[in-house]
Amino acid sequence: MAEDQKNTTAAAETPKSPAAAQASRVDRTFSSSRVPADTDAAGKTTISDGVVAKVAGIAAREVAGVYALGGGGARAFGAIRDAVNATDLSQGVKVEVGETQAAADLTIVVEYPAPIQEVADNVRAAVAGAISRLVGLEVVEVNVEVNDVHIAGADDDNDSESRVA
Image 1: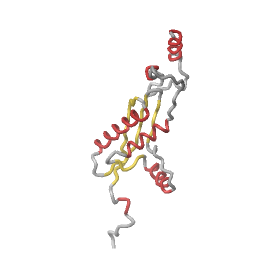
Image 2: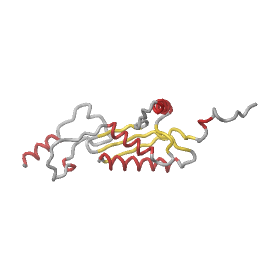
Image 3: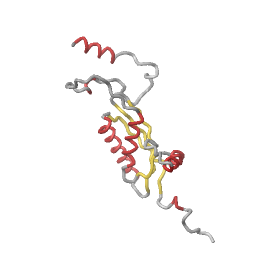
Image 4: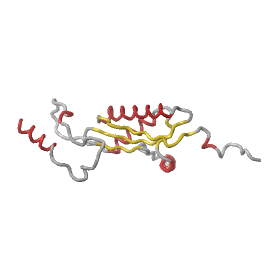
């Protein structure tokens, strides 16, 4: 038994590859303390970055005051995807996922007149909570970039009357 613990410790201390040595916001080392002691089944669960990004995107969209996720170009492509019923729920979301931690960067559009800082704080809390609760990862950072404010009716200019005669 003590020999198994030494092997686990030695494996955790092995040098990382040059690609893994790059600066990262998340701890990519595996912690055996995350495995319940009463677990009889052997194996490993791997959660892809895309799953974490989708969870973050869904959580952010549920926050009051969030009109859309992503920049202008991404939203234009998103409108096309929506038209063909292929919505990308991870649009505007970038994540970095390690063994036990995750970090997320979101780009949002806030609905006018919602208080921007309050909406960003609520997005941060909702995304961190969803990733922790649904994926089981510790969230080390959630960055929110607000790149636009949506004004209701501004997109409906074609239906309004012209102001010039």
